[in-house]
Image (cartoon, rainbow, N blue to C red; front, top):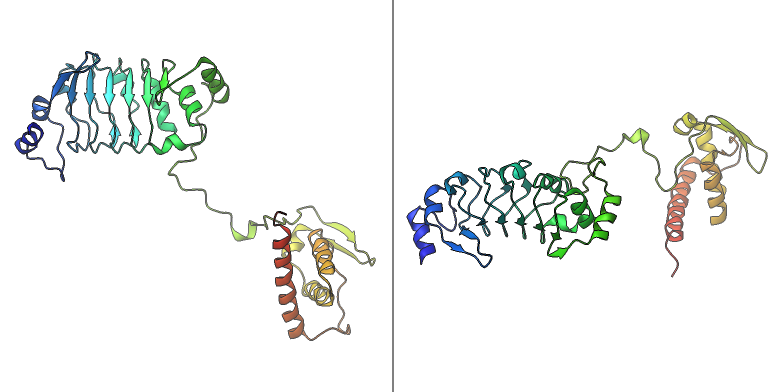
Length: 309
C-alpha cells in the first residue's frame, strides 16, 4: 500500500516511470539492513536516470536502485559514506569514469541483469580504489572471451570477489600475465563500431586459392612450352592466351587432367597459344564446354575439402 501511495503522490505510473526527486527520496522506504547499514529502497519505480542524489545528504550506506530503467551508471553527488550500490535488473550499458571520484568509499557494486557489453567499460571501475565485491552476472560482457581474467587484471587491485567467487592469488597472477596493467587497452570484440570496409574488387583475391604475386618469371610446362607470367599479366590476359586456356580445358578428358591444368595456371604456367588453323571446336561449343567443366571442377574441389569421416 505504501508503494502505491508513493506512486500516486508524485504522479508516477508503472508505464511512465518516475524521476528521482527529493520528494521521492523523502517518502521512500528506509531501513537498517542485516549488515547494520542504513539503506534506502528505491526499487521498482522505473527511474530512467540517476539524478538529484545530493538530496540524500550523504545519509545512507546502501542505495537499492534495482528494477528500474537506468541506462548509465554515474551522475552521483559526492558521497563519503555510501559503500554499497544495488542496481540489479536495469538497462545499464555504460559506467561513468568519475564513479570512483564521486563515491570514494564504494566497496560493493552489484550489476546483475544489465546490458553491459563492452570490456572497456570495466576499465572505468579502476577508479573505485576501494571496491571489493563486484557482480556482472547476466550481462552480455560476462560471456566475452577472457572476461574473468580481464576484469581481475584491469579492475581495481582491491577487488576480492567477482560474481560471488573469491579471487585467488594464483588467479590474479595469471590474469596479470595475460593482461598486464601497462598494456594497451584490449580491442573489444563486442564493440558496436562498424567493421572496416572491404577492399575494392580489383584487390580481392581467391581466399582458398590465392594467386601468386611474384615479379614476371619465365616457366616451362611439360611439353616444353614457355610462358612468362607476372602479376599484371594475371589481370590482363591477351585474347590468344584466353583462347589457349579455353582450348586446353575443352581438350581435357578426365578430372585429373583438369586438376593438373588448374594447378599449372595457378602456378603461372600457361598453355601454348592456339593458332588459327588448330582444329578445335567452334567457339560456342567450346564456351559451353568450358562452363560445364568449370562447374564440375568446383564441385569436385568442394567435395575434396570435406573432412573424411
